[in-house]
Length: 514
Ligand code: ZN
Image 1 (tube, helix red, strand yellow):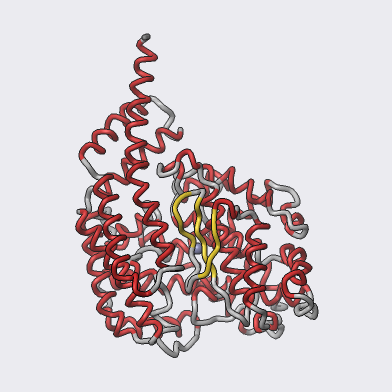
Image 2 (cartoon, protein in one colour):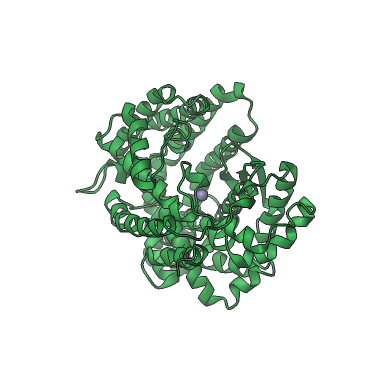
């Protein structure tokens, strides 16, 4: 054996040893993914207590498997092996990201991990009941416990000098994101959105909302949105679409993606919007490299990039005139002649009505980010001790008045509307807005790169956009961080300008404000 081939064999052994150990640990997470999906879709109420223990056990086992000293040795050996490789080749990226995950994970004890998982599962159950009864007090002790555990988690992880606890938690959802970064984006964005909303409020022309108040049978809606998901590119051989109270996309790996939607009889857009959204997440998962499953190169880049995929299919595609030119004639196959009296203009207008409201997931494109900003402010204040948890409903309601000019009538439509904090997900919300900004920026670039992209939507051709996303985003796994990916693909740092251009180009004519 020559020296070169001996060293390449050693490199191969170091990498495969590490990668298969990491993939083994990940199998436990992917199993938890199916149990988590089942909890939201199929599990009877009686299953809740033991399910929380099952999930806690899997979280603990996965954590223990991933944080053994042996894993540390495998990583060190693999780092030696990739030293001479280009920094952005797949093997080097895998080793770099595994190191980062390992260093984070080893700062947390497996008992804390299990307690977070069990509390998350129980608190979620308590939240469902509190929400049903619109009674924050029933959820308050669970939120207090969740915040306390998250502060503990943040303290174990640590944060850069000058930062705060929120930064340590956000890093899990969007690597290296800080509250200071978010504030820099949110403050000017709030002012720009406020200006746009003020103009829309004062407009004399109002788009028709009639299609949003038109009842259609839920069975037919279900067939319709499944067809739409398939046509835009969601692969039902490698995924499912079921119902849940809160739409989400989860599952196990790129060949078993579980997404959900929900149906409202009086508004097909509710199911269509959430299906387009979750399909965007689902197609991202399906576009990840299966051979790299469980490794960073086979994983999503972060939650902002994930959200950019869902928001693009929901907004840039699903609310566009081009899309509706194709979609309108499809309606008769599912709803007979019930929708015939709605013109293309009616449908397009209903998809784009702006109306400041109470519920984030039902909000339009122009007000959506305001909902996110409110949550960011609140979770930061909860962690920093600037707000007592018992005061959450009152402060929430005040912020809704300040940001959106709406009066919150009860906790169900106020501070109990989102599942995130009950699951222990604090530091998550801003990724929704960052993803929304990235969606607009990526879409501008896709439009430049693919001539006739939107004309294709009008013919029901969505594969060119999906291929562009597969090549530029999905196949990259965790090779680049949010800002790096944005610069690499679009040539510019992440900016709010493309989203504001997208909103103004659409909404100003719709409201007669040009
Ligand atoms: Zn989403």
